[in-house]
Length: 317
Length: 102
Image (cartoon, rainbow over all chains, first blue to last red; front, side, top):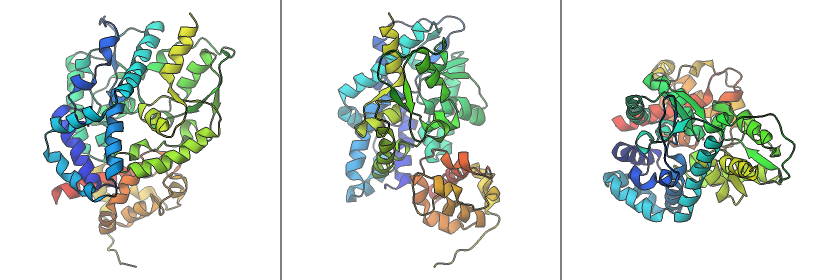
């Protein structure tokens, strides 16, 4: 395990300098929208706010590979000096290490979400200059001061652009905007995850495809109690699913939150959750980029809900 | 076993770090039983330290606080609604503030 303060100081320095924990200039890694077609903002439209989480996965994985090699070695102690390097240099290192195939894969999930929202007739728009990392990792790690400073910046930017309604794509950003921003900043937005906008026209008989096993992320399952939404969507598309041991509000953590301070601990927790999911003998579907990336590391056949829903909707044509 | 000084005002001190349910805990151990870490009575031991104000013990074993996944299972199942997960998060804030002042 690394010294948590070394990791927190590094992440906080990155957030201060580049507004994300990786030290990468946002325009370098938030590029998915360039291939998503034009967005027009109409009165009453909601802002699609990705919180940069899906885009961040290739960088998180690159950082995790470095940390995994360092953990427990003599080099781990030198991590504390990392924060004295310019964020741009740290970011450049991660940019070189981040996999192009992963960037394409995770950007593709955001494209699927856009297609699903369009198909559902939702009025929304996207603008990269309104989309920021929420600061949730600093909050989770106990850096309340760093979180509040960053969240204040993000909330101010959103208010400046007159944003009132927000569509989120991941549980961590949803929790930050829905629960923490009102609590710490006193600012409220109408925040809803994208899957709540997919119309449910009642349950349909099976679409003929194999059933999927649902892995609930902790923040949707427990903190936000939104586990039913994705299941409603799957049922309305005729996609059969099975419940695994420990699901919904009692879901098991995938281990992802431990990765920044201990990749070894992450692997330990991940192995236990992977065993529970494997017992379902079905491909896994989840709705969190951190869970998705982590379960992929365990070698499980896993897809994001948006990918599954996008495919079901395309098959309906 | 090393002695620890107790400070019954510590729960008050923790309020500055967002912890206001520290004294609700009656030490039943449900949190440690459900915690996916399966690690040395975590988080029960830390909560007990907070309970009795064993400040130095918390600082000595501070690194263990960051093992917590913040998954919320302990908070969901706590029979006293003492928010063990939030208490651990508050202790992280306390330790970090202490380290940054040092």
